[in-house]
Picture 1 (tube, rainbow, N blue to C red):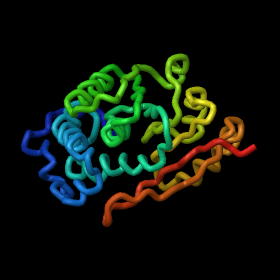
Picture 2 (picture 1 turned 135 degrees about the horizontal axis):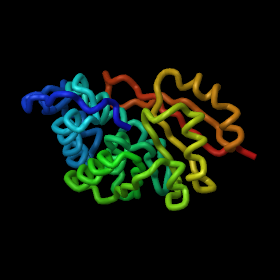
Picture 3 (picture 1 turned 180 degrees about the vertical axis):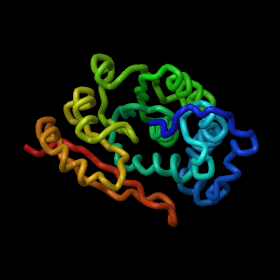
Picture 4 (picture 1 turned 135 degrees about the vertical axis):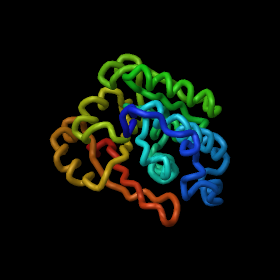
Length: 227
């Protein structure tokens, strides 16, 4: 989801570049992303150039796009199981566009209610050579008749209890969720325990690592409870 609001002033072009990011050019990025690196790089460059201007990220995030946004999004990929992935509240395309770039063999549905952000998602997928992403405009509770997910992911959308209420109807019978959360994830799971129980889901918190020296990302997986 997006992390900033539309700014009042434009950012100078010389600041809208990955050259200011300390991780840019690090050989470990190419190794980590492998064959998907060109697509991921194209998206990172586009986000640096257009993200602030289009109200998708804040100006202070221009120097940490790789760590704060791209690697943070990529950390969820090992938890995405199999089948169709649905990114709810996709916003800037985090993690949805990154996931689609990294998993070209998977269908990734980007669900986003705001028109200007769906326009961005269409453009980003096209310009970055990502042809496995489908953009759907609407809220999760509005698209349940047309969208079914084997895996749901979301970043900075809402608390776990709200995400489950909104998104559980989208899940296939064996579907799971993999949510990018903060350090309060264990407390969120505890607060959502009754909602999780009604939905037949069990929560688990994971520290997801990417590169050495980069803080791990907190991923919460919600899986079907054993009967």
